[in-house]
Image (cartoon, rainbow, N blue to C red; front, side, top):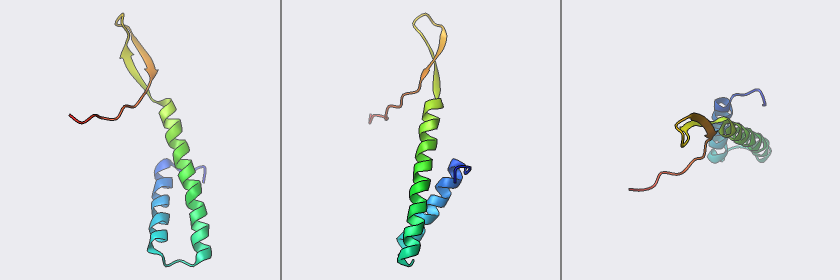
Length: 79
């Protein structure tokens, strides 16, 4: 599971959710794919955490020199 790309993990997780929501699986199979889904969700979260750590925004400091600072996300505000 660790060698899957984020998009592959997310696609598989979506398949698992659809199968579980359908409600037509035996209990044991539901538990098995639920466990797989939990692992995939954790992998996706790790991917996102790693990506967030890598994102930097170029910015000019007060002297006008270019520098890098960590990215911080602020939600858009309603106008």
